[in-house]
Length: 419
Image 1 (cartoon, rainbow, N blue to C red):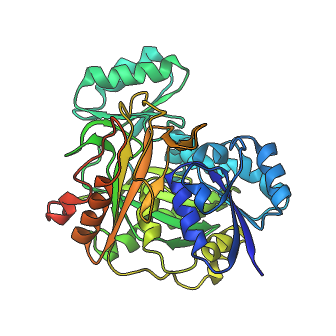
Image 2: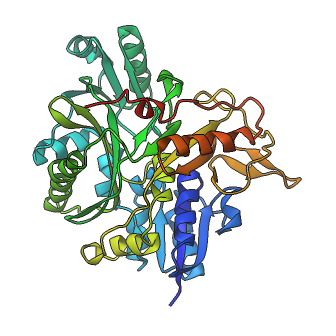
């Protein structure tokens, strides 16, 4: 029997999910809301607001969807998955309470403390009058996080106290508490895990490149590129992350009566004392998903459906292709500031080009519509080959004023990362 799948979201992550689902022989119909110019080639796009639970449920009913997969964090934190489940739809993505693991940094810290998971020392500041004294308790590198959702851009890591104070003051001014954290040293790892209650199935680890410029310069972004697997990360460290971090957090959420169902993303720093959690996300990460799913051999629809229907424990072990995958983000002019949009894009067709911030204009041309416009994928026998393919594909793409990093995966390739 064919499975009809509805994916919620409009970015590169959702395009990657749709590509993965299209390779699953059991999936016969693909829909996405709202989607983008690239998703239209493999799924039917529907103009529905992702944060409107009523709109999403109405569309799921109209399509008679067998599985709904929610990509972005905002609808999850707002409880769209709860409403879908109440309406009888198998839904991949946590309910609002479990999604607070990303929606509230303070909640995540509380869960980690209860679960005995190592993370940075932190302090929540909700009153501007207490800010300076709190800043004095941290440094010489300050980590300042908006306690709410900020699409990956609410974090400032700086050795400049004035810059740290300025970001914290901005957050407090709009009514958001801020989280001050001690700085974690060591290379960062993104580990995605399918989670169904206390059942945890890890995917392969990846590494994101957060800063806008080569050699990790400039401001933080939602992510400028990623690669997988990590040649410098021993398999036993991945197992340690699953056993010492993800499983205890999943168990603690079950203990609280808010079990997690969906994709739990652990962002970690691998320091001299072992893995420490930088943050948790309640959904697939973007752009790491694009690289990770490119190497998945097992049917993606089967894995997501098992998670959504509470049968993850019965899923056969995941199988992966040999080799490596690299994703490089092509960003619009001025990103991560207010991006320039509406520019025509040429050469962005064919295998390995994933659309993120794209749309079709009145004349039928594909144009930029967001900050991160495209993700360009390279897959090869090793990291060098995957990098070469990604950058070769980028050379064929033209977008006025666009920029991308030229060093995605390079430090790992050059043997400069170690733990």
